[in-house]
Length: 502
Image 1 (cartoon, rainbow, N blue to C red):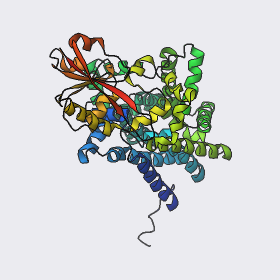
Image 2 (cartoon, one colour):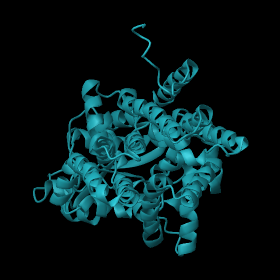
Image 3 (spheres, rainbow, N blue to C red):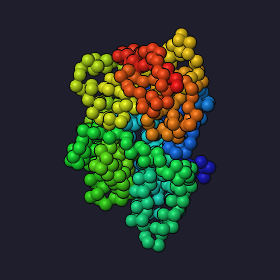
Image 4 (cartoon, rainbow, N blue to C red):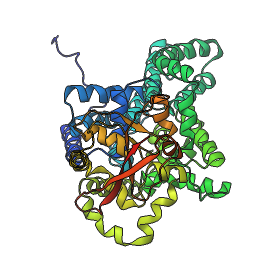
């Protein structure tokens, strides 16, 4: 007997050209993300990682802290973990589809639709919690498939570890974990269900213990504060909110892919397939409540819950033209936005076209408009550039005006302090004000009260107002200078710098 005859390859091997395609996929995303400065949300995530705590997105922020420590101030290296995790997510989704019974070719098409959607492309090319949540959740789903029909506690423990890691990436991971708890309770025999539920929950709770401890210490302040995010004020009645909730994912996936996913949900209901169905229903139901009650709607919030439906969405009876359309339109959407972030001048004509470009404002609540002042889609693209030069010009103005360079910087608009913290060369304190999301990170009152600094710099986009609190603390206010942020292909954005004294 030949000594190697019992070594067998995996049942789900993919040939070399798909390995090559996966490598090219990684390189293409790395190319489009390189040379692009940090956007305002990315700068927040980086700053939070440098002042790490367990209150939110501990796993992504800890990874960013490590990447920055290994190679400081390199945007492409900071994004590299997200890009590699995006490739891992594609591999895990392929395995999920194959384990569910899809053939090699349908599974590859399903994986292509996932990997080339704008949602996956963006959140795993730039700094975003979804880029970390998705692989953790897919790993939990793969473990759940392995656990199906088994009473061995090991796959349930792996489910718990992966599910707990998903919660450490984003609060919404708790809805996904809740779906798996319901699946264990409803699909297992009474004599086994509680033992298997414990095998799942105990590792999950152990992993999430830092988050639980942090939230208990703060009275769950941050989750409550985030309830003001992404409110669309123009949608007053429940029917319009429901409609917009259902179609809002179109900002992240193509219409054909969204149709396939909703059809997968219908199939799961018809087949009473509880494993893909319950996590999807828990996530959709939770965010539907927020949409109807608070008007909070954002498409990428429910998309992780639809991942379990992917194999059903691309079941063998799916028409080929639908699959091709889903992949093609998703690729075009991802390529258009990915290229636009690297070369925003490609869409500079949008800025002169009124209505469509300015429709962005309708998706932003009044509170968020003062905190995130982008007033058009073209400005949203241009948020990823001009900050390095802006930081240099800011410090040059202080030298020219003979203002102490290390005075604290305060702003109501979080893009300013966090990007200045990343690109600035002078060590100083950075504060936000009137933005409760950053109470325990950069809030001016929480950070310095009652010993306010004697002099501060207040920076705001031109036309912005000054908080009443600052006016009551600092009676003398002098405008230092106006400063523009320039990005090739974009309209310059102007900011005002004020010097405040008691």
